[in-house]
Image 1 (cartoon, rainbow over the protein chains, first blue to last red):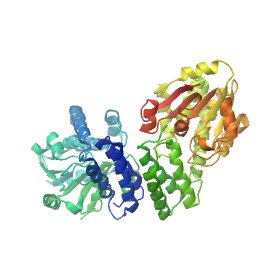
Image 2 (spheres, rainbow over the protein chains, first blue to last red; image 1 turned 90 degrees about the vertical axis):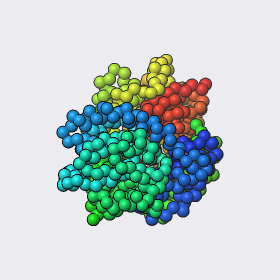
Image 3 (cartoon, rainbow over the protein chains, first blue to last red; image 1 turned 90 degrees about the horizontal axis):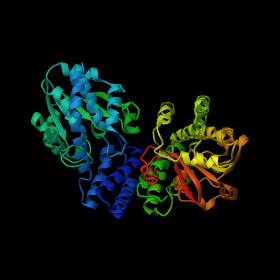
Image 4 (cartoon, each protein chain N blue to C red; image 1 turned 120 degrees about the vertical axis):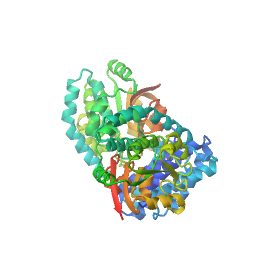
Length: 285
Length: 285
């Protein structure tokens, strides 16, 4: 997906949200915003929004010396989501279509947004999301592919916190399929890293690998050999969240994008509306 | 209220929202965003957010030749809100505390937001707002002042569309009080102008005056003589919306701020949370 004009104010907002978390020094915050303003003036639209946004996280680390400004919130949301697991597990156990319900719960975790800075309330929104139909629903396709035999699944994780809910979907998949879970190689926004995969108990259940960089989504200019190998082996890619959508959209493979559309540009690209929840298949073989 | 660091990304967003409406020329949109980036780098924090934002609307008019980019939407929301009036009137007629209910409905109109660009849905949100308690509720104070005799009320309007709901509150006040309604002297965002006051039927009921400028809220550097006169005469000021809050907060007079807090900075300044609805009295005599 290409960066567009609408990404400019959003990147400025990300700069503010990150700077505010990284430091209390108002001068440094101002410096980050001014550097971002300079950067945005020159921004070319031939990259993905995810790659265009990476700059603000790099510059924040450089100016403040804090390369993990979302550290505490990642921990917080891991704890919050962990506490919700027993209830969510019960909902899955009682449902007839367990993979579908798990997928919905995993996408529910995609409400968590600290980068763009949307307001959300996990406690209040669970019921709403569970009742809400997918605005784009390719679940039947997913089910069909899953039921056609043992599959190699590459599961591109998104945020900390959310990764706990992803683990519930992984539980539904791992007995009949080979699931490899992907986290970032270093801190970027509140994205899940190996530490979060450990917290979620994923490393004990399945293979967890890193993208090769701390870039948002999949930063193709610096993907690890291991990622490339697993990507090549995958029959199905489950891609969570906007960062992965922005960088995986149009890529080779049978990809199921699972996310909440958190901006108008991504919503338009998918063919849904802002705030909608989505399972969209893309087959580029 | 003073501009703060959080206003920087918001002003960039306003620039995008306005530019996108003013023109389809991508180069002009880019020019507006780049000019805004330059402006933001130099922005001093000794002005109100409202005054700081005025720049993007001026520059958009200058670059695109379109000085009323929200014109069609103002008309649209005037029509939508007009169609809702019979139902709202019924709700007021059936309520025991008619001024309170009218005030809530007037604040419901403050959901309409085209500048900052929040998502809202008038049809879905009416019921929610009517049930929602005010997070800061000085209605008793307002009632006490109103019941202490005939008062001169200066009613600072906010948006088109919303002005139709304001007219319902005006109806509750005008028999026992003298109400003067204030609109902008020229188009700024989707703020109500004299044309909207005519559409809402206010000019036939009460005196309607202009602020003296097309600035957001009350632009004190260019207020009209008429505004100053009416401001001096007012026993009570009803101030709708954020723009008026930002420019009236701390000013002389018995002011009741009625709004929905649409950003964290304003919410913090009032002492409530983002999204809360408020009637807050400020007495600076």
